[in-house]
Image (tube, one colour):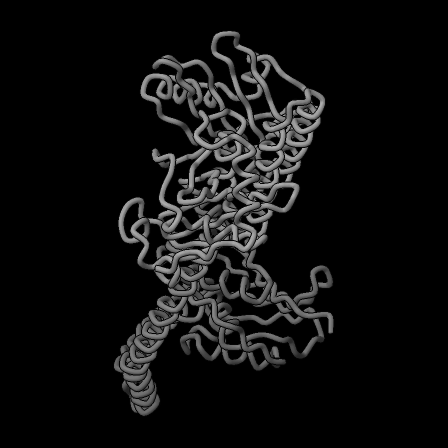
Length: 545
């Protein structure tokens, strides 16, 4: 610990201090208002008006401590008066001047100190207005400026106190009030006081501004209460009752509606003043914290958005991994199941061809039926794999310019050999090519033709009509059959997955056809339905280019 040096102007400084006749006087409300305001503006638990005497520092006003004086050689303020600028000690434990000070190593556990010199008109620095905290910290620029201006107000108040002239007293009071008002505007803090006996309420100009009222307006208690919601009034009433019963202050954040109807949030602080153990007045401060709450809410919203984005990205990564694994499993399924079935179908076809002309008509018919069953099994596997892999995954289309007649030829070749001759082609357009994902459109058209052949009477023709559409621009493929048509109760959900009707099936083929059209920006429609047959239409959207 390093004691403060003695200023070169010490005799003049002590003479000015003694001339004020303020040492060892009783507390005065004006000076107490300065320390309370300093503590609130700076957010500090301790605030002091310290006057540095010959061997001691004496506190004209103190908030947060009970002592009225300490030895000068332990006083932080003895260092503060050595310079005209505000002295700030962020962490006393790290400052050689104070590290061994008993007020740092013991009670009250001083860590942070900021003191603004109280400078008299003649230049004598007789003490300081200081704030103290138990945690290391610093003040922001506004808090430093307010503390300096409050110290200047204390000096003016001391001059006022020392002046015998009434006019001088009034001038000093006005100057002090002006300074307090300016300080209130800078810090955004307004003051208030309520006399419990007379119920007279007094507001500072800044409190009036917070409520959108003209400076100088003094509302009645009823008017002031009117600005708060019923819920806020209940909270304030409870805080006041607790304060009067137990001597506790309050620090609340409440919504109110100003005189102009503007909705804001305020920080409302208050304490109860007692005389002879009886509450006589309430006093406190107001601060508009609307911007701070909005900033906090926005920050919280951004944090939540960031967390949701992180969760979404994590879920997307997990989903991608699952889809990749599913795709790999489907590829294995397609290879391990479909390939042997393809080989079996080819073997059946080869055996049937070998028996033709050798008088084995019965065996050939059986092989044809087996091949038809194998074709149905392969078509079912194709539909299942398509629904699980290409369509449910919604992968990108590989659209290419496709020869329409080639597409039709391939789809007809997918039909069982005996059924192919039943398909009649009606070409109502000379268009030769269209853009599409040929694999998916082949699958959709194959499902429609297979259904039409299956549910038409044996031997009756099935028509595939190829046409154009200008509005919308599309290739139109109509598949018409002579079957019994679709049940009317099924029609509204005909293209939904799992929809089944009297025709049977697994309800997957028409759903796949719809999904294929969705992916192409087109649609599938039931354009004719009745006892004499039905017509299903595929519209494959085309680009104008």
